[in-house]
Image 1 (tube, helix red, strand yellow):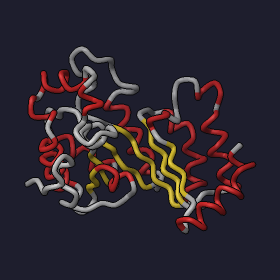
Image 2 (cartoon, helix red, strand yellow; image 1 turned 90 degrees about the vertical axis):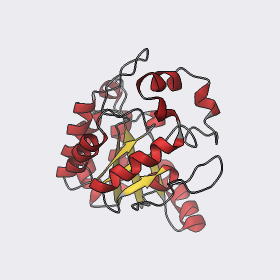
Image 3 (cartoon, helix red, strand yellow; image 1 turned 180 degrees about the vertical axis):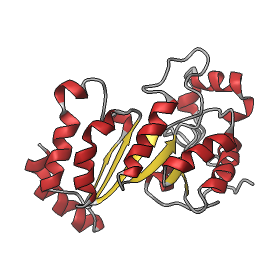
Image 4 (cartoon, one colour; image 1 turned 135 degrees about the vertical axis):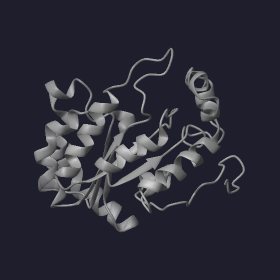
Length: 229
């Protein structure tokens, strides 16, 4: 399917924006458990070797990305490639909520392996959950990633004030661990700490996902548009 539509889609995108980019998002996880059996993502990535996009962003919650590392190495020579690993916290579980797709430790090790292969590697702390040891967390991430992106459910769930997420059990679970974590100021405080270990390589929200990083930019309250210090 990708190969059959490549010429038309690439031509349209390049006319419109000058660039044909593909974002394989963790919202539709590229490496669910079924991928080992069906290899859908692997087949798309293989097709991209013959018909590469100009830019490819691959974001995942899991370690299955390591199964296609050889393919990613080839793609890294053919297009601008970034691999994003979602690591929302230094805790594997919040009270009352299910566990993660893969442990924090496993995901940290996986993104480190990808970076060691010469591929630009980003940790996306999204959605940002309570972090027990912020300095230790970001120090560890800086050992395995080139950049970090932070995104709070306020402004990051498709509603400016986080109303979509407020209808779920997540805010209460976050509040039970760290009451301050349900406010947008928590994201800004974490971003300042992250900048100590990722100087000039901290992204916030959509800008960060798009690869625009800095130390202190975009630290605004999405409800008011005002800078938050």
